[in-house]
Length: 290
Image 1 (cartoon, one colour):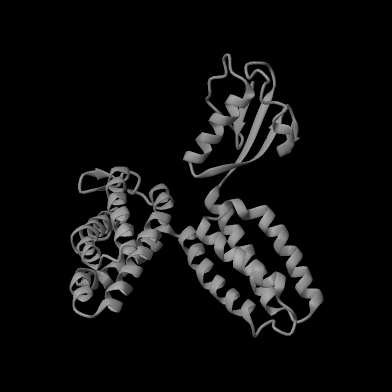
Image 2: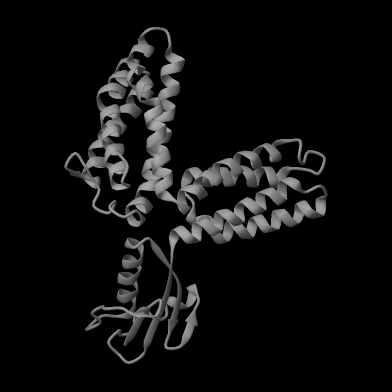
C-alpha cells in the first residue's frame, strides 16, 4: 500500500498489519511532531469520521493508497483563537436581539468545532462567555457582564496567541518576569512571618502563574527554538527536571491547603527560587541570551 503524509511517502512497515494499526502509528508520529491529522483519503476517497471505522480492519499490505493530511496544532489553535477573538468582539458589540441571536448560533458552532483544542483553564473562559451570551438581553449588552467578560477574554487569549506565534519571545518575557520578582520570592518567608502576608501571597500567585506559563510554552519552545531541543537544567533532562519539580508543586499545594505559611515560605526560598533560576538560565542560554 502506498502511504503518504502531506504528500511525502511514509516509511512504515505494513507487513501483516491492518490499516487501523497504521493509522494509530501515524497519529502518534504526528502528535510527537506537534501536529494533528486533519484528513484521510483512502483509495482515492475522502473519509469522514464515521467512515474510518469501516477501513481499520483492512490489510495494510494490500494494493491501494492511504493519504493523510496533518497540520501543526499550533497553527490550528492560532486560527481558532483568532476566530474566537472576532466572535467575542462581535457579540459584545451587538445592539439588537437579531444580532445577538446570530452571535449565539455562531458560538454554538464554534464550540462544536474547536472545543478539543482548549485546556481546562481556557475552556472555563469559553463556558463563562457562553453563559453570558445565552442569558443576556439587548438592554444589558455593552453595560453588563458580557462586555466585561469579553474584555477579560480578549486579554487572556491575546496573551495565549502571542505565546503560540512566538514561543521564544514568550519564554524571554517569562524570564524577565522572573527576574523582576526574584527578590520578592526570596523574601516570601520573611513577609509571611512579619505581618506582610498579603505581599507574600501575592508573590506566590505570580509564581504559580509564571510556572504554568513556562509549562505551557515549553513544548513549542523546544520544538521551534534552535538549541532548545536538547535543553538540560544543571545536567538534568527537562523531563527529569520537571519530575523533581512536580514533587515541590505537590508540597506547595498541600501547604496552601493546610495554610502552612512556614512551609510555603521555605519552599519559595529553598526549592522554587533556585529551580526557577536554573531553568531560566538554561532557557536563556538556549536562546543565545546570558
